[in-house]
Length: 348
Ligand code: PEP
Ligand code: MN
Image (tube, rainbow, N blue to C red; front, side):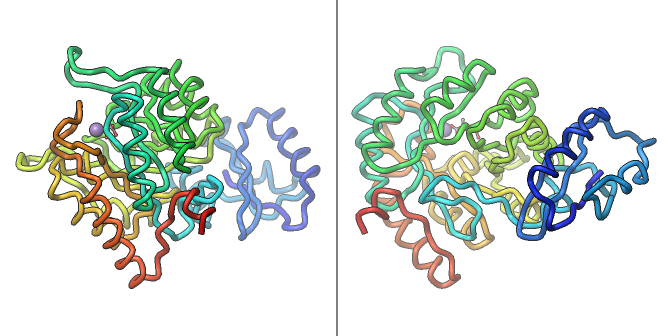
């Protein structure tokens, strides 16, 4: 149920109303955008809950049942785009934000060198996993907390934000201590305990689409995070598994305009995992910008062949630099600003 409130309602009165609804047994989410203030009742509502129950309450101007199964992720609840505000970098505001870095944090030197190079080329967010979900239990599993420390230091030194994966419920507070964005990987898109825990965090979440997940399933996974209190979710298209074996996955770029239609959440495209092949990263990143992605995430390394994981899809610093120039040219033609790292912005 969506309750649209009087535009002039004070925040004290809104909170009194929320308290009242909670004592009536509903879970309430507050939505505010340029269009108005609304309350979404996401738990406690069933087929027998009638709009009349709410229409007489103070401040309530309109009561509408959610028309679809999507609630907090839907445009019925929030008409304006969600913007993830990370200081200088705002994801979802119509600009393009570039995430870059290695698949895994391998050493202090490696992450510092890569951070320096991608910041110089204009990336805003450093990526790198400290906890790696590997198909083989014998493959490199990540440096754990030590890796997070290296990453934080490298990001701060070079004026970058940082994103890192969480694989377990326990990882959430730990990774949130070091990272600006928590990543939930494709394998964990429907790890409901992890989604709930990420929902209780105040750190934004990058939620990757599972390789066999529909748009509905991706949005429902995002609903978990939003309904547990964290409204800052970025959806990620990272390729799905199809009959095609030439590429690692099939990058589904139609996901961008489709999700744009269905939700107010920002959308990131990951052409690295989406194709698995180095020479496809630049063309698919440019295509992602052209179809309206809010961000791209690109696995980049000072020595791609020596990457401990995902080397076949990792591009060099030089290729990344050329790609950034192309993205700027395409962005200029489309009227889209390419976000640059905090440090460069300060220096300018
Ligand atoms: C990653 O980004 O490092 C990763 C493991 O991606 P995915 O979950 O999309 O496979
Ligand atoms: Mn990877």
